[in-house]
Image (cartoon, rainbow, N blue to C red):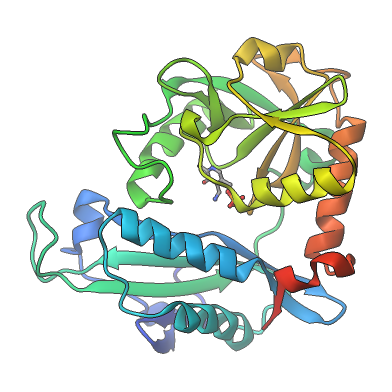
Length: 305
Ligand code: PMP
């Protein structure tokens, strides 16, 4: 990923992709305190547009606030940086990765005295859990790792350090032959995927864990709330047990990278008919209509680059 042509926005400048480097004594590299976003831009009829740019930037600033990092740029500058990176790299549709990190002036757990840095990169990235996964659904395993407790790391921050938990869970599940991991919270209730929020459908009603289960407040999750309301479907946020998923009619993951991905199996137990369910399909279609600019009601969620 590092050896390619293109530009990356770093601390206010466009730099050549291969020169976008940091020092090995970077504080975040050692202690893991940093924040990031995952954002997507889609190729709409009106041109390339970033989906829910403002909400992603707001969450990035909230993550920085939770982690006590003073952002060196304002939100408008970070929004503009994201638009510029897509334009500069001539991308029609892409994934964007803004990152905030602590510099290399000094080490020691206290980050005081270090500069805070920001970068934005963008590159083409297809379906995160595979094109086939989007169509047929994926196979998920309940992780042996517990999701972060809400008072150990901060679960409403999209914090760099939170992802060692995601990595362990994802590696365990994929090495065991599954597509993704499902994590339970410290009390044993369903939290989220390694990089996705989860929804289940039972008797025409949709359920998702409330955020006290340590799940990230996903922007795709919020998008699905709007879609469900439009479709006249009720969403209930509540505590969910893993066996409720086994006996659900349908289940799906949501995320900027994962988009809306059906789940056809959990722990080798078939969910519903073992394929993308009808409500999941409706939500997925509505989602792709919105992000691709085919639903005028949500045109304000699309920022042209
Ligand atoms: N949970 C985790 C742990 C994630 O990494 C993500 C991806 N950002 C999500 C949920 C989904 O969030 P969003 O829909 O905002 O991408």
